[in-house]
Length: 92
Image 1: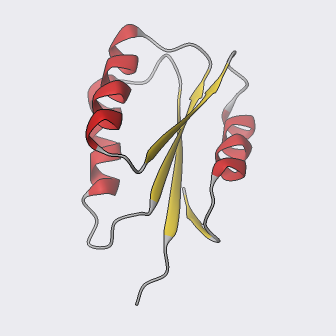
Image 2: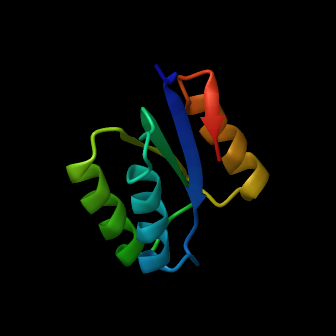
């Protein structure tokens, strides 16, 4: 039996909403799906990105959101995502 694993990814206001959605959907459609996906919102997002995240969360209970009040950068967001993961195996 495969161990459970977590995936974390970050998103910030300049991301393309459609590319971001495809990225998350790709993780959800793996042969062995992750037990949880942590999405770190690195600062305020655009309305379009927030809508994509809301839609993904509505249909995928394994998605958890961590919101940073301001953009802190990739390394800070990565640490916040890693801290939020509950599994020993973590993919980025």
